[in-house]
Length: 308
Length: 263
Image (cartoon, rainbow over all chains, first blue to last red; front, side, top):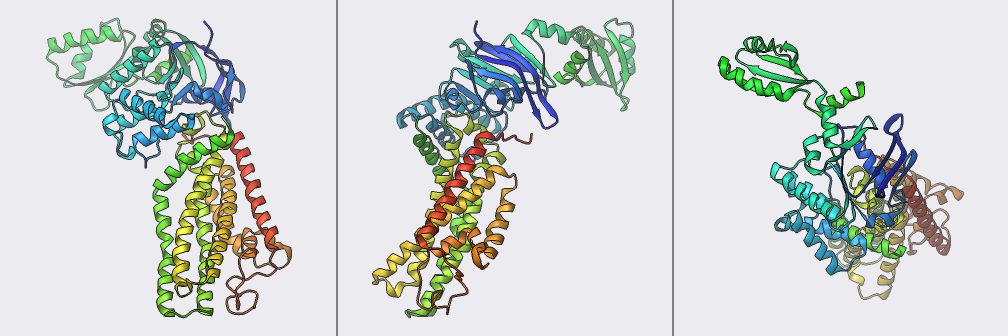
């Protein structure tokens, strides 16, 4: 399959700070997930693809065309920025029709496209309200609407699910999948693995400006599973709880928190631990106040992968 | 897509946005100050014409020429590119199928139009209130149009300068303030060719003469003091050249510069 978006030895510096480091990547039709912790270089990569930045080294092309200072390419690209920024003094309708005006459509076509985009993101009812009065979820959806309103073949979505409630997320995921089924090329970034997992099985892991790995979800899952997880359990009797787990081979390390009520467990087999924990708690009659995973984020996983 | 169509589309978008912003409401209210003062002066003159009306009109022009249009041009000119960068809305614009210079020119034209309309309304109201006793004189209208034309050229030249500053500098407004209310106010009074390094020199060179005014060396000479006016044709040409060159430079900078947001 031919690459729709192609990066070749792409690098970008911000002064002395490396934003992207020698990235070579082909993105094909369908949904590709760009996964990495905050500051990994996801947005930089997307800004280079959308011609908002000029590569320091290397090239990035969309359907064979370089994007820096070639406005014609933007008829095919829809971009949803990460930042929650708008022209606040306009309504959702005015925002969409105003931006669609840049494509040279006649007024009826502008209105038809704006109405369709608003309908897709369920904002028709509030289209005449000023954007400044929109909730976070609405703002996220109107941002998505402006990216799809001109019906582009390629969508670059920078953290499109952030700020949405679970229902909103589900709707947007369904929508993105629908666009994928129409044969579009979609690049979605996120720092949350389940979000990407819900959208695609094809993911690219990016960290500190470098592509760490790319492949399908099971491969990435495997990498992540190898990473030891920390689980923190706050309970009425953490020492009694610890005593029950001492002989468990899945546990690598146990420590007690400074509050005297927290047991911090390190394990490679998180699911096994959770499976046993329920039984132990019931058996011993220990009251559990809170279970959390202090390092249950991609950053620690990525740091672990880099360190490997 | 032709360049003029691209500029036209940007113009349309930003005329709409420009009218909506709170900034426009504030500056429109500021434009009512000379109108209010004109009403006060009118009441004081009680129908008299002549020197007092001329003096008042020249004071009015000082307000417009050396304060109001400079202030408006400063805030609207620097915001042509800077507000998109500061508000991070630039992404919405530069990912559209329009050449980058079209955004600069279209938004410049849109904001210049909004500024001109504010100035025109304010000038018209205050001028005709001040000269209410002479509304039957055809010369009054010719002078008004000339004033309006001079202010229009001033808006274009100042805005082009501030637009250019906005594309180059991060804190363009500070440098703009120093230029608009420092440099311009001082340099215009320098003898010899030094005064020609100010925009206001060319604008004043285009203003009509009044009896007892600058040409007579009496009355309001201090207010619209012109040491060595440039020929009106050359002055207009200089203002057009200043506008064109600075806008072209702004377009070149905006096309080549990367605007990175401070995340």
